[in-house]
Amino acid sequence: MQTPLKRHIVMMGAPGSGKGTQSAILAEKLGINAFSMGDILRGVAKGTSKEAQEVKKLIDKGNMVPNKLAVRLMEKELLKPENAAGYILDGFPRELPQAKVLDKDLASRKYRDYNMGVDLVLLLQVPDDYVIDRIIGRFQCAKCGTLYHEKFKQTSSFGICDECGCKEFTRRADDTYETVVSRLRTFRSVTAPVIPYYEQKGLLVCVDGTGPIDVVSEKIRKIVGY
Image (tube, rainbow, N blue to C red; front, side):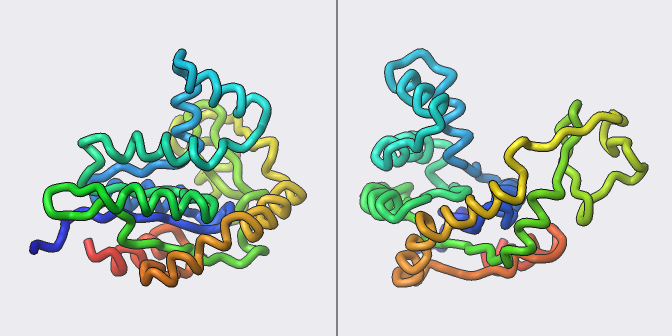
């Protein structure tokens, strides 16, 4: 049997570990799509169906989406023909029940001779103090949305966006020390149990997520082998 050209990858890591950035880079290199639960929920909420209204109500109230609904929505995307040969899940599954249901459902799905189940889990490891610095120091252009950081990625000319020349910048309201610490606690209590689950299945590979984006990307490239 031929080795599949595309991979079915889960990108894990604490908030601020860089998993969103690395998922996007890897997806582009492999020519497949990356999915985050947040993006999917926001997309669904724009619809008019009963399911869309249910999701919108949960988002507006700040409530978590039930595991069964979260998995169903994710699988709906993954099982589209254009995603059959590969996908990257950005921070999903978020909880152990999600991982178990996802594995069970995808195990019975095949694309040609290839199983569609997860075959690689990348865990970006970053110390807490590094995560806190990374999150509370980030800001973005108010016009084009280009991301910057007070320490790691400053604008070339002070106060001027490199991409569009705008002089106005914004920060996310929840990029505060208190919020970041709370999100790290949630990650450890809710998402961390997913890590040994994938480790026992022989799918987990740990990646040092500190350092420049291109350095981390190169580490991931060598693991994936593209």
